[in-house]
Amino acid sequence: MRIARFATPAGSVAVGAVESEAGAPLAAATVAVLTEYPMLGPAEFTGERWALPDLRLLAPIRPGKVVCVGKNYADHVREMGGDAPPERPVLFLKPSTAVIGPLDPIRLPLSAEQVDYEGELAVVIGPPATDVPRERALHHVFGYTCANDVTARDQQRIDGQWTRAKGYDTFCPLGPWIETVLDPADLAIRTELDGQLRQHSRTTLLLHDVPTLISYISHVMTLLPGDVILTGTPAGVGPMHDGQSVAVTIDGIGTLTNPVTLRK
Image 1 (tube, rainbow, N blue to C red):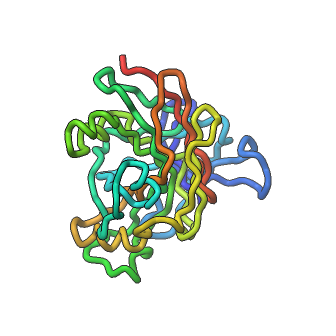
Image 2: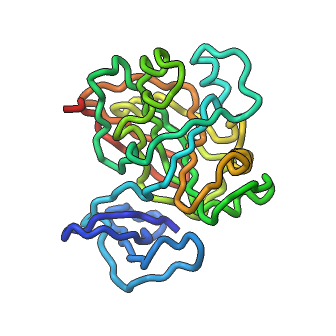
Image 3: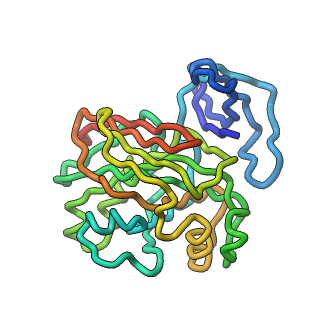
């Protein structure tokens, strides 16, 4: 099931299941409105339906926290000048205020000289997870979406830690929706800048896979329904500039596209 969060033409905000015939264009899809996110129980529908083109897709979830994983592809570790990949996941946080949705602009801060895209698979938590063993970790997943871990690279280097560089408003695009039925073990992930392929990898190359990440993080902090984990980016990261457009595509999910503008 694809769960979208959206604004109607009247301006109200709701969540719904995106429905389409196999092979049909998304322009022909409809959205069946849900009473709430079906994270902890079966889906319940209101009976209301909308044509997908009539809606404005929003960030599919408003997470309480976004837990991110750095240095989780060996090729990205090398391109950033690292030697040996880390033995344990490298964790950091993004504020929930960084989250934006499809087609929302990534706003480049005037204080940053280089702002990079980083396409990633994002995991959305369902049932709460505390001290979860790896073999049960996927039972705590609600679904998956595309993410862009936008980073002010020069500030990351200057600060020596990543809070400022990755925490600006608009630095965590998510979308276009949450896919609830998906195996994260072997998914192609691609990032394009103005239609030019910049990143192309597979989740089989994650140094720490999704179950390992959920288990590891849950032994550090409790993961609550709607929390998001960004699983790391492969090689090919690079700068974005005013007027460009960046798109992250993941097999089985879809494409998250955002324009790039200067912060006013």
